[in-house]
Image (cartoon, rainbow, N blue to C red):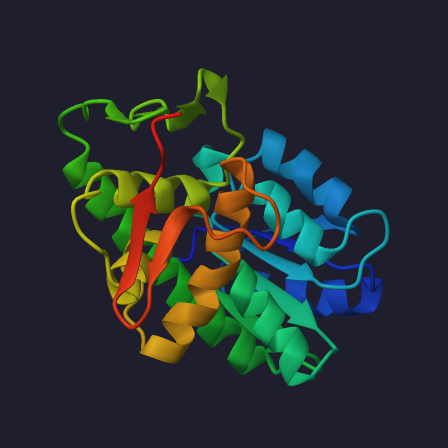
Length: 244
């Protein structure tokens, strides 16, 4: 593989940052360094980045907050995001995966493990970019479902004429459900669309549930309400928006 990719590394520990930079540059990658999430966002706004490595515990903006900000931008949807953390609790790792991150590496990090994760995620990202480019030959027609309107080309959606602020994966989920309102869509199919992976029932549910909850809130439903996106137990999900 041609290691000309640009890797953004965000970590507030200078010694670890230097070690990661040396490991990646020795392997032929270009590295951008940030000491927190705010610096990382500023670099993303001014540089083309192919992959992000971010510590979870950082001042000003932690890794989880950085991830959510990154995924709000459709132009960054194909950038793989790997969490770095000294936290080894299953609950922390599970939370990172629920957000939709591409991988979660625990410190101390072995150089071989770091490089294997980077190579694998970059390869997967490039495959997804090629696939998206092939399918983008013709513009997609807008979709209207009751009070909801979606413009796939603009990557925007409106409810009652109000623009919805959706992350890239939330938009993909909503668009996928809106294209097939006549049937229930399986969790496997939805995860394939939102995360680009094939997985089992358990992990599909873990990855989808936070997206579904967030999407329901943005569609105007309170926490705990199940409206907007209907869960058909044991089958999957269906978009269910009333006309008024």
